[in-house]
Length: 288
Image (cartoon, rainbow, N blue to C red; front, side, top):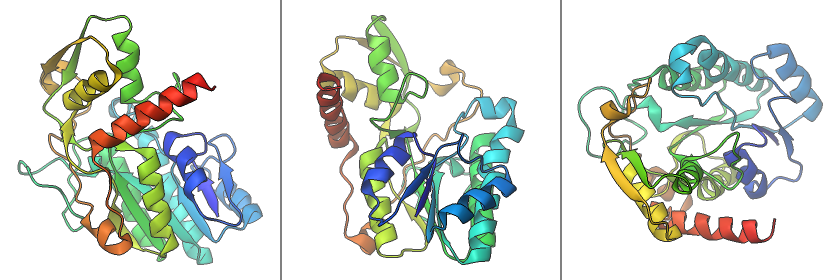
């Protein structure tokens, strides 16, 4: 098995969760998926039976400035992987995003896998294009859409929302957080275990994999500060007030009932997983 995206939050947990006799992990430096020749050379040497792609261009706002870069990785790089796997009969597991949704009529109920995507941003469009290439080029595929990832492999260079909030709380008495974007913050440990379970039953097609429940980013920040006992004045603001370059979905909660039906797994509630993350983070920091 080959895991692409090594060093990332999700890939780090996948490396621990995947049940493979032989697992080779590749960072971006080791394998640039935008180079089709490199894809063939590196993966031919690895000779995997399954390729798991947890890599991606995830700079949502920057993608509005340089959409060609987002598409190079999230669409055409994924096409290189899908074409390689399809030509050799190898299974491809590809991680996508809730940002393929968000446009169209206002939504208040979770999206299932049969709902039509409608991205609002260049990032979302690039990820949706990648999904299309996987379906077109690789018959043996599994597409996993997830949302709001945070994991223990986070660093200052590649942080996550929780780490950003904790860092800001050390220097700012007041923090303003968007309160009109509803999604499901998801712990990469939980997501990785579910992806491993899907691979274990040879699942195919498209699956939604997130923690359960729904929250705004304000809700998530409030839960983090409550659990971490941080005395911070938290101010809810609108997306318009925040002024990000890329439009985010107002509602992109994903329905994971297909995952549960296939594997028997019931994903933990997002707030419970935040508590688990903070506990594991504290243990790690005490024992670096």
